[in-house]
Image (tube, rainbow, N blue to C red; front, side, top):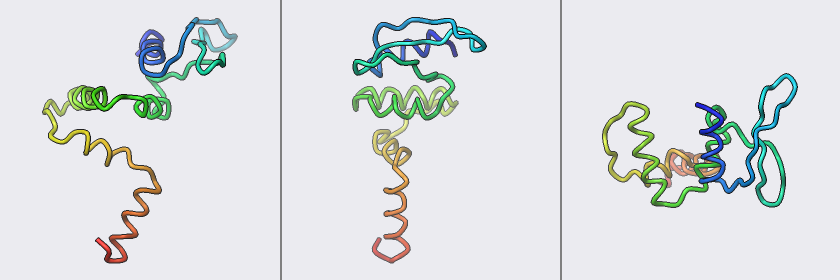
Length: 110
């Protein structure tokens, strides 16, 4: 993946503007941009799972459906998943949601 990929994700999915590569000693070029009125370095979406998780949260339901299909193809599933939006919600459940569900099972409430 490349800085170009990071820039596209930053602009189109995450609302970054005015992107510029700035040479930083010992790091090569670092991508900087503006979001929410603040100038900062743009996350390396193509190498940082946490940054990608934040980007995924900003997708519309339609984008999320398309993304899920594309991701399934990218990881080699090659199958259109049924009820992908529901499966995605399960896959991205928070630790608190998971703990609450497990507690309900363990306490015989489910």
